[in-house]
Image (cartoon, rainbow over all chains, first blue to last red; front, side):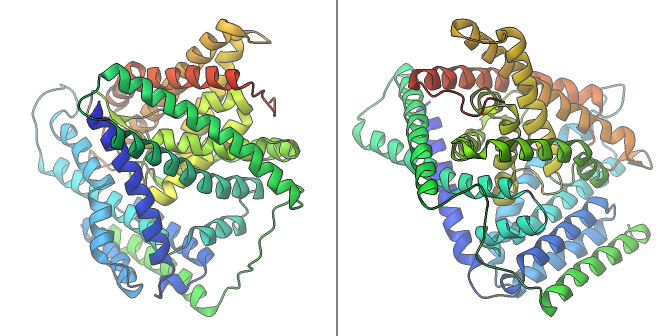
Length: 267
Length: 222
């Protein structure tokens, strides 16, 4: 149980750290960082879509190479992009796929590891990895606020965007409060504690956190009213599409079309 | 429970928007109407709460991990449509920010976790709790509702994954998720029905006790 607490604390601290680092990276100079977030979002979706339809390993690998090239042009640390992506969802996917290689179609439990099954599993993992890489690259090179405005431009209802932006801030406030509590506990507890005591502490923490959130919610709403909030959402910055943005979208569309065309011919 | 991109045909992930987008627009219309109340910051907070809950994964039999969502709790506290919006928001943040769940799969993940889950939970809660749920009966109704909501969402995921090998095959090999309905549905139901759904029910009941104790009344209604 205490391992579990430690691990939770580590996860939360890790996600805060990652968020801060991502924001720094997204504000650094680079090719993708300079593009309009709407163009980037569309280009990313096109790439993920193309990866979703591809059934050829060669073409998937080529598409992945294109994603990596875009990352290099944006001075994103490749180590971060590659490690962060492949140790996550694709690795998990590979684990999930293992039983499918052995227990296939009826009769179940009959061991029949075949080359086609293995091949299709490899393509599956490659597809997942390419899709996730494109998405992670989008997030690594776009500040959160710009991503929100891009959603706004894509006709996501403003209420959603408002709640989204507030949630994001609150999420970090809650995470900070939680790590604070975990650290305070760690620094005051000597020796081993019983499981029941730990569960009680965790339940109390969750309650206190919820309590604090409600108070905060009321305060924030009062502050919003005091500043003239009428329910309408306004943003200060306006985006203008430039030629480079149009090129990026066209490039992604061409790449996707070429990949899909090549995918029908190559293995 | 968050389906990543590549597990399903893009036709399927994006196509599920046929159901999810109307649900979102109803939720947005309801929210716009109730925006005058405190519900927006409250919703954002509960959504952040749901986000934090989903971060805490624990291992379940079958090799995957499970987590609570809190959708039914949000539905009871701020209303079912607010829950649709709130959990969707948490899922979008997870997909964009943590790569947890795919980007193309956002409509599908939202359908399972942000539409099916809270609406089921809410319906069961009202069905068991009566018109004005109160006291111990209210807590029971909330717990059973939360259990039903998460379990039904897990069933939906199992069916969606299980349909893939039946629909998309090349030369006898599955193109997307390879497990059939007969494999995917039991796996999802066992993992959630025996694990995560109980956690979800416990979180919902404890959360509700807390909200009641604080005297916070449902500001939005439905």
